Image (cartoon, rainbow, N blue to C red; front, side, top):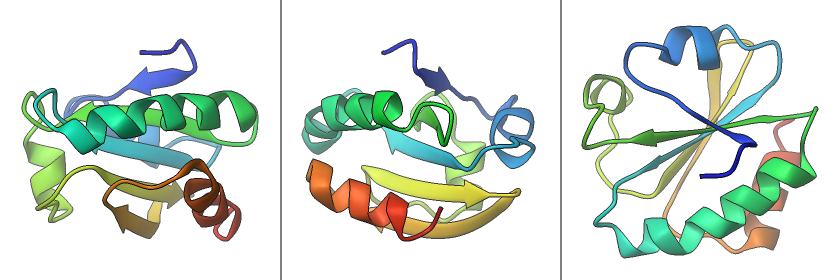
Length: 108
């Protein structure tokens, strides 16, 4: 995982995501998920391109089940955009870099 991506857990989600001064993109994934693995380098590129404007976080749903369940995540990869502690947008499935950039730009 890139140094630009913050690993979040059930334990630190509130502090790292909900209380972040920057908007936060959370990537929910699992090691066995092929589309998640394909999305990973795109999320990494986004984390560098938006540095200082957007925090990018990653959550392994196998090791952290409480937060994904509380947001009703049923499929992965799921990307959620949080702003000022609120969930503002969700995308499910593999996205291209241009699709992800468009998704982010329309909400931050």
